[in-house]
Amino acid sequence: MQMKTEKPEPRADHGIRLQVIGSIFACSLLVASVTAKRLSWDAAPVFVATAVILSSLWAMYVKINARSAAARARQFEKRGSEIARINIEDAKTMAYTLLADAERFRSVNASEPYRDPLNVMPRQLSEFFSRYARVAAVFGDAVLDRDLVARSASNDRFIRIGTDVADCELAILPKQEAIYEVDDGPASEFRIYPSVYHLIISLDQDYN
Image 1 (cartoon, rainbow, N blue to C red):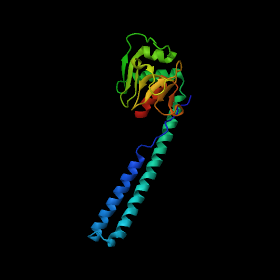
Image 2 (image 1 turned 180 degrees about the vertical axis):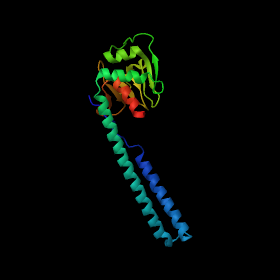
Image 3 (image 1 turned 90 degrees about the vertical axis):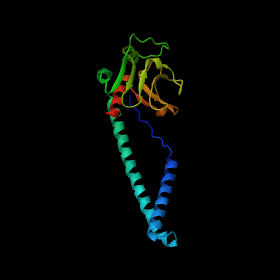
């Protein structure tokens, strides 16, 4: 199973553009007024030249930033594919090693075996929750907690097993090992991990 990368969503792009345009206008006006000593039509060429230069610099920054973001996305996707190819036993060993490191994860050991109230847990995840009652990433917002197991608030096809940043839930489909990052978006865009152990490895790779 391949881990799917999240589709980036623009956030407040329109507002940022307006702010940039306003800043370019204000800076150009200031430079023109200082250069011409006063605001008049004589300052118009300086105003236009300054606006063109600042706009060009901004366009260059946007282009470089877009290339950098694309490179990071490719690297992220490549790393995700490499993690997804790890077999389950090796992934389990790697995950348990990471979970033993208090600088990476905060883990609360379970005091008793996990009892599945909804009868939905797959074998590997049930084993995980019998070992850990709660796991939280030191870096990031991801939390796995057997007390959080319930129907997903975002998509009732899924069973919540934890939470992540903002309104994102970590969830499974009943009796399936794959972990999904579930939100209000379409299910086809959910990021997927082959198992809870692959999720742990990926969470560590994201920040270390």
